[in-house]
Length: 275
Image (cartoon, rainbow, N blue to C red; front, side, top):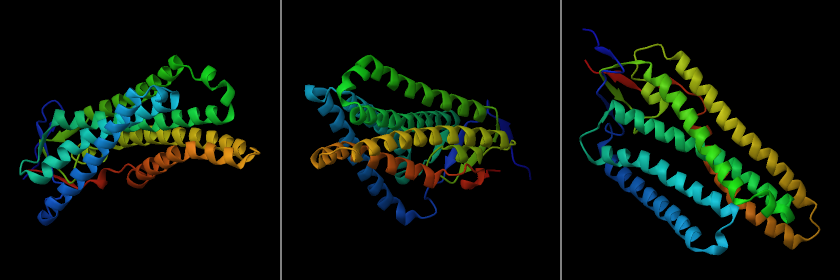
């Protein structure tokens, strides 16, 4: 008995298994993820509204922060919508186009957020190390350009990855042991040689992650040196307080990325073709 194999132009559906093997956990997980998503959504919407209506917050720092909140909303909405659906509904089918679309937007928002955090580190570097020239160095047009570049980089990386995935052939019905369509999950339902695609994903992952982290670390080295040289302890505390929230966001974001996606591997999502 042979598996039915077809190319990407004929694929119709994938099946997301999720936590179906543990039915008793599905409702608790649904409530947990719904709560997390609701808190994330309300918190980030609150940031966007406050920054929008408050003239005193129309500064480069809050301009970047509002885009970071927007990216958080987009990423969590793209992924959580299908996640919540498969936790409470019997229908776990996702179309091929829907799966690729979900992956494209997840990839775009995640990589864009990586570079957005690096841009925010540059903003803090200018504010701490050159406070007298802050408004000159960070005009609105330049800030908008930096934001545009981060979105372009995120979109470019996503286009490259989605293009490599579209060149593969897939089983007509693939069972994905995952809640969503991330790279290794899609690779797992392919019947083609995926070594080149995995290498491409690894290169893009290393480029985006390492460049964001290295830029951020280098800028914070200068920030720390500047803070240490400050004669006033009050000024030191005030300056450091403006960076703590950004450092926390960086630690959480990159910590999660490194923990879950340290090595792309097609076997990380167990799958099987349907006869």
